Length: 157
Length: 149
Image 1 (tube, each protein chain N blue to C red):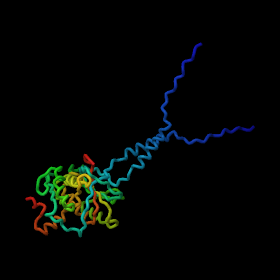
Image 2: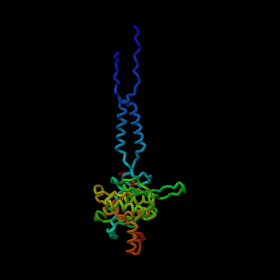
Image 3: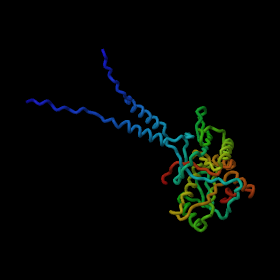
């Protein structure tokens, strides 16, 4: 007697696919993080470019230990910086702005001023602060060797 | 003649497209997920006008962390060359040696300074000095979004 063989239908089981997919989604959602990928550009001078900017030609911004600051020795609010330097930089766009921060001040106080200086744009303000000099410890040391005192500390006193 | 009551359609949630949506979401997460070389939690300073970091930039971390053994807040220094995960280093002098190695390979490498906003500027200044001595020129001060920009 000849037996009839029933052909088995080939099928890929996909019932668990959605479960796996959702497990993967949950994994990616849990491991995904909001990363900070933006900041302020800051150019460090080369060792040989250590010539100090002409002090009397520069705008001098000093951040004090308590977070307050002065521009050319005048106490100011953060919003007053740009209007103050505007005429100076319109006359001389290459005029350097020296940003000196007291060692005891918080890093965010320096960032606040640096960010404000960088906010001036050609299209909105008609000028841009091209030369922001932030003297580092060794540069200040060079000044001290040159002048016998810290000119940034002594300037407004 | 008695009519049989109308047949109620069975309640059914169409799930045929669920797998498609799920796979679309997986692809989205796979594409947008980036390999981060540093995950240190840092209270970044705020800034309004920021620019993007470069891909493969080295990272210098200065994070304030409380030591669970003594409960005192310490400043922790970490470094990543942009390829490997960040590792704890002793201080600015170690960063100098690490940065020198990176700069010797590519002097244009960007260095991201990821520092806590409440760190004393003196410490940041010391770090910038060491980076400068190492020949670093391109630095980006990592910030978080302020109110505008």
